[in-house]
Image 1 (cartoon, protein in one colour):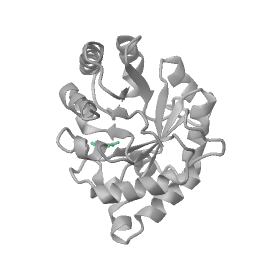
Image 2: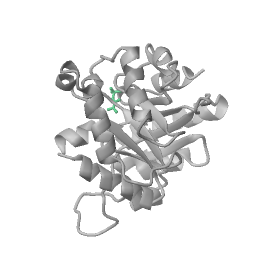
Image 3: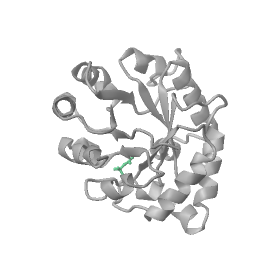
Image 4: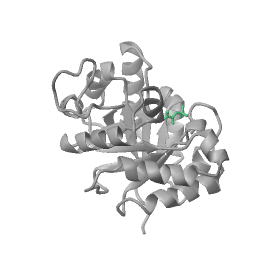
Length: 244
Ligand code: PEP
């Protein structure tokens, strides 16, 4: 299969007040306008900044995403944000099933699946995160856990135009640790066997300007989901530039 156009997605998590977010977005928008990299670009700011960052990015090459969405469309869900609201605020993508939500918020595969459905209902691309814990990897269960998460979280009717899968080993997130390149390829191949052809699979977990080229150089890797390094325009840009 021909190589897919890579996607570099930044997950800002719960970081940034208005001035920080707008400065980062403006910097990225300016870089994208003057020297577009050979990849698609996406940033996922905290919910408070989605609309303002969207206004800065409007019409440019950097797309906008949410970090999570509710399963329901509207109603009595205090504190939640629906996929329709994200779409209304200018988003084209939403991250679902991030390990920080699976872990800290108790999101099961079933809950994640309803969120993917919500994303599709609203016309958003769902970035579905899967990944094993350190204990699961050490027990030799990484592939089993990841493929079970994938099949449990992925609704029927998936297609490459509205799905991206992010393989994010929990133990690699924010730790500076990454799997071996062979391990990344092995898990991506297993994921690919369970999703429609042409669906992009991102690697996420401690991607930085130093390791980006070797990770993004893997045939099985169609981009990166970047946390910490997406908060500095220079670092995020260096990762995007590693797409070649
Ligand atoms: C993430 O949380 O999605 C992530 C990849 O974080 P980091 O790049 O900081 O490891």
